[in-house]
Amino acid sequence: MIWFREEGREKSEITCIFCRGTGSDPFAIATCYVCKGKKKVRVASPNVRCSYCRGTGVSPIGARNACPACYGVGFVPVSKGAQTCPKCGGTGEDKSSLYCLQCHGSGKALHMAT
Ligand SMILES: [Zn+2]
Ligand SMILES: [Zn+2]
Ligand SMILES: [Zn+2]
Image (cartoon, rainbow, N blue to C red):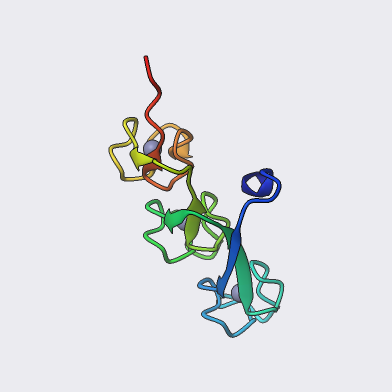
């Protein structure tokens, strides 16, 4: 997962929102593939609630799948000092690419100095 690429970044463990901590896939008789049945997931800090799925962890499109922006976790790690994303205005959505690539669906992004 690309947002764990920053070595040494603090991560927090939260209850898996996709299966609501049951460890089972809410849409199928299967192990939850977001937490792999562990009922908890780790997310790097700081993070914000995923704007794209509104923190549900479920994709707004094809609602049986995990949200592609937050991978079903419901939270997206952001950079320190990130503010409302100038590209999507904080919605986390982008009509051409499902979720906003600039903020990765979080609705927050660093404003680049010009
Ligand atoms: Zn789960
Ligand atoms: Zn999401
Ligand atoms: Zn954005």
